Length: 389
Length: 248
Image (cartoon, rainbow over all chains, first blue to last red; front, side, top):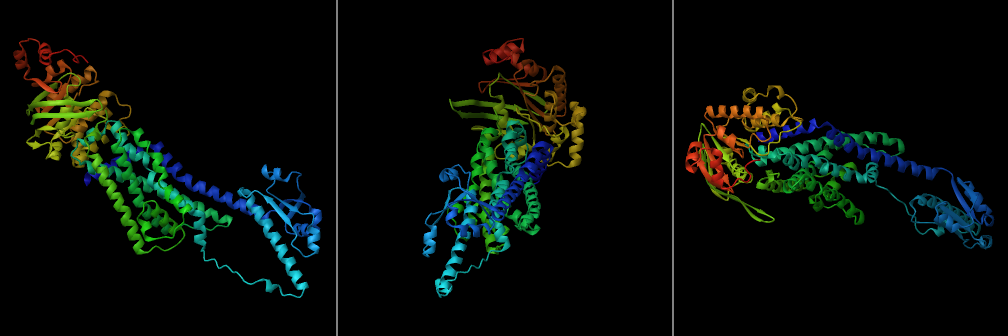
């Protein structure tokens, strides 16, 4: 036990002497996520408000066939201009988002009270065009409804006769859950930081120490190999916890500024501490797994080559849930990465987590960490471990 | 006292089995310096690694002050001060912190560590570098730090693997004096070397190892007599049957 604490203290001291690496890992590594999210959020919000509120320039071909419609559109914050000659090409080369074509027989059909044809020309695979298209479509439907109602009234029919159903929405989304939607990639960032945040460090204290030839003298001391390994794992976890705390505080500060663009997200200190608790098992799992790898490979380089695979692991549940969304179930809390994903989402959405769920989650997480620890300890007891040449 | 009985150790490699040690036996007594002498690749380092429990022998056993190296590995390590072939020091720690770390791993108190560090620093002549970060240490300074680190717990038995490797003449002379001092304190000292003169100058008993086997052992006089040579070096060449690997 005391050997473990000795190793733990030494590794932390050794680590923090390497100022530049610590700075890069702690500052840049942990702040990148929040800053990236802040920037993205700002970009999305700006874009949506610009496209929805600014006057929309709409190229119209055949405007002369429907002067009333065109005038009505002008009154709805739409600027009408004449359409380019080659409509398809204009859409294809993205010089226009959407073009309205009014057919020459519009006037005839209109006078006969038949549906007059207008056509919206756009490319549905272009995300950028979706907001203007939706805006024009809504306006056209509104115009169509208004005129239809007037026609019914003129014939002495109640407009409500056309409505067999009245559909009303009652949205039960809370402000937190709405924010949670925006935060759907927060779990990935946090899980990745917890899982691999201290990766270089934990590889360094085992495989790196062997390469620098100081592992052999260390193992010649009476301290047991398990105690030495545990000290190293704990040091990496402490470092990981620190970087997670910095990261979460950065998120909190970023969210404070986010209220400026209409999304209210708040990260309470109590939520932060619960998030840290959720991340502790994954921190241990990551440290044990990397120690296992570092103890079983021949060099630091070989250990690092596993990193690209490991980085994919936390992404898997997010991808699976994206393709195949399933309801939250208790068994999910035993699956690593998936369970962290669910727990973090629950926390940021402000949902309550029951005692049973906490128990299952923590038990499963720590059990997996314990298994990995035991395998890593076996690896540490191999003769080959200490010998670098 | 270290008793080594009939050690065997083989390794699997891509090209087949390598029989590194094949039946090594010797006894190193307290108050004596025992030298393991042999050309490069003779199996000296592997033998020593089995002594300090880093490796388990395939066959045979090692007893350190009566403790078995497999069944009582921790007791054995507690009684040994080891300077292994690999003597990396932690670059970002000072020499004192390096030494202190090992003292704590041996379960010593802060006071004991401080006293012992000072004593070792005096004996090894390393006061001037004690509080410097060991990044940029010379080979000699690194070796001194590693030796102090290995002996911090005042062990009865000392194992040094090629301690003079890469050291200049003055440092080597200083180190020899230090080893004699350890002997005078009644400790059991084992050191390995491939340099004839060094072994001849220091050792009470010499164990000549080649190709994983003990070719001869005894005091320098006994070896000269056994091979009928006035010169120890000639006796050595006769013992291993070749001059290969001697001058490195």
